[in-house]
Length: 105
Image (tube, rainbow, N blue to C red; front, side, top):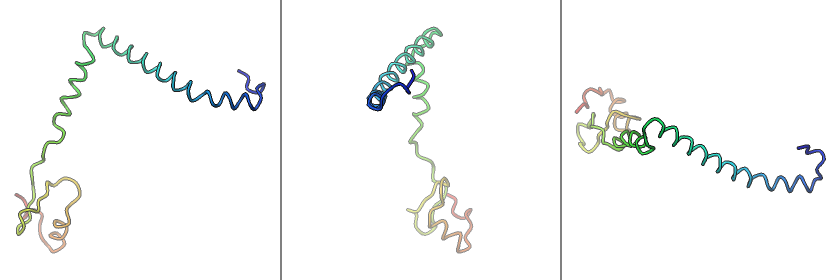
């Protein structure tokens, strides 16, 4: 398509049509891709649900509690698993010359 032959009005009209056409084609391409993947999986003796089952198995462990590794010696409600940023009470303990090993549970 030679855009140089179009008028400004025709170019603006074309510009307005492009987002809708892109959306329609992306939707069609996605649908075709899903069909191709299903066919690929089916040809190998599996179903899409079989593949999703593997994914779900790893998600089952998400949200499990991590065991407490450190506890404040005077206030038992202050605990830390040892993951992530050190809590302020641990930072204060270390700043006052304390040893992290003394807080181990």
